[in-house]
Image 1 (tube, rainbow, N blue to C red):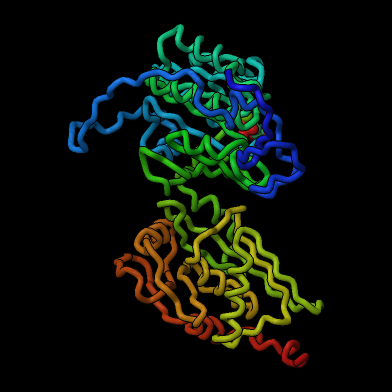
Image 2 (cartoon, rainbow, N blue to C red):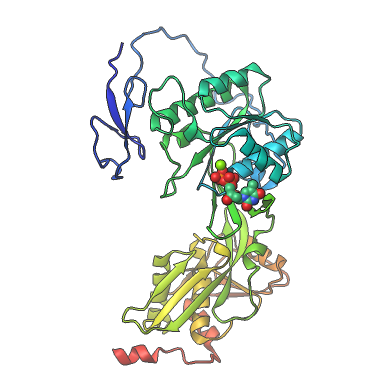
Length: 469
Ligand code: TYD
Ligand code: MG
């Protein structure tokens, strides 16, 4: 019998420590060490009992394979993200902040599958059956034959599932509440989460059911508990959204059976999540025509074109160090654009406060937004609206040149579809035909500035700043 030693395991990174410490030396997090028993936990090695293995057959790469069959949920945005539906026998991890709508999404997906005649079991470890029922009523799906279980013990769950016909989908809400008899630590600890996930994944592989594990996200955006769960499952999806906004984005981070660059867009309403098949409409909804400082960026999220409005406000500053505030974009990227405008385009913003906002609470990660940001900044400084119905995209390099970005065709097509009639982008992008759009390709950022300020309402030079020097 292995001695039942106690070890301390960091709940953030999974590092094993022999004694308690306030701070994990491995990841630097404070107060994350929890006591776990070594005999069964992460620190446990293989058991003492030696067993002779059996011969397993080997195969060649070239053989008969079938495309993995799919179980479509008919929630199109979810099917798009999973790559065409759930794969039988696979395990999926759905992460997201508390209250973002994970349980709601899975209840809607469960109901949709049940309606199509598939067996669905919803295991709730966080809410009582009555609470889950209330949600289902609110979503208007209470009449669907979804089996509810309020249970947290893995052995009980597996025995219950094995007693009946294998379901097509098992939802486990959430992985942090599950615990197994084989591990002595408290639920939610690394060892428990890992062993419980392992047991459920084993069940999925044996029975052919798809299991969906719900995972909470820590304050720095990682799925709480060990990253190892992410390695164990076949697909990892994140459900994210901006506080105070209704839209939610479902993103694939890992997918063994499909693309990882897909997103699904939803809107939280009083009757649950509504699918948004045309996200651009959501992020352009608040657009006021011809306001100075607003530029429309033709972006790509995953593989989908999304048009977003970028708003800039450039105002004379009374502070020694002017303010730069950014919402929805990278602030160091903004500093770079300001520097390029100053160094290569003669646009001085050193004496101005700069506020940049991406409309609708959207977050842009693409460098392709550089050109639209620069256009919005110059437009606000010059107090002159940009050409109406125009979109912008292109990456700005430190030399002031514009670099072409990928998927120009997709961006232009979306712009045309939404009634835009002009596009300004980097020269050298893929050559595309876009009927109905006036295409304006430019080589340097200075070209854009010259075009924008011809006839500007106010002089662009920052005289107040020039006086200080
Ligand atoms: P929930 O699915 O419980 O979030 P999670 O499981 O990720 O913690 O969703 C909770 C939030 O969604 C809650 O703040 C209320 C809101 N909500 C709606 O706005 N409309 C609805 O129809 C439902 C069911 C929830
Ligand atoms: Mg929940």
